[in-house]
Length: 302
Ligand code: Q46
Ligand code: ZN
Image 1 (cartoon, rainbow, N blue to C red):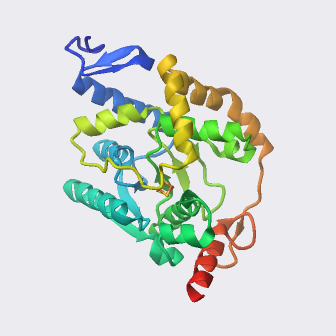
Image 2: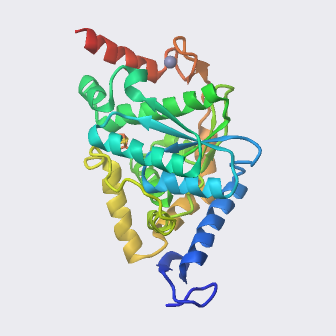
Image 3: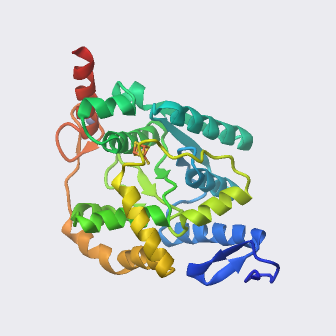
């Protein structure tokens, strides 16, 4: 197999693109996909700062690496979820990455903000761990951006993540989630940062190859709570489809974005208020995060 660009022996075959690349040309292909995502959805500009949410995994660290290489003004944000050794190790990976690049990293702990780490929130709420965790992450990302005066948060969601989320939303016809599924979400309120996913055009296998070739030291283990999550089952189904027909994920996500999303967007239309407690954006009176923190506090008092 030869590199499509230069004809040298290929290091990686990309079946869905019907192409193969040598290592340097793959890295350039990867960066160009990120640039195309940013250009097409006007995600970022080089003269405004961007908060990059990093988990210590390959995707978010690959994203931070590309943005740094391309000269964006980045600050990393690591949210310590308090999930046993997984959190200790993933935090260390983020700190080592930031130190090696001389890039600023902000760390916030869920335990400080909610009153308990994710495993305790799970017990208190008697809900799947990802529910309290996801809620806290979205809230704290936005609040960190506001505190730091950064207008946009970038996350490392890749094509596989987007396909799995879309699949889950379609299975349950969650029309509000379908309206919000986009590589770039504009700010609809003064207290809401923009949210962008510059890796949405790249598969998990491609981000893994990028991280490997760039010698990024990332945490390989997944969150111990990921195993039971339904999103993993969705990913497995999609992996089988992709195997049988390369490009299935790509067509699923890009077809939705090009042809279907607008219909759901029109159907939505919510009014946003400021939470009576914390001032962040909510559709109700008190936001879901403040309610969660109350629940944790009440449990601690018992
Ligand atoms: S960290 Fe949190 Fe994920 Fe772990 S508890 Fe679930 S949501 S799986 S990306
Ligand atoms: Zn609140």
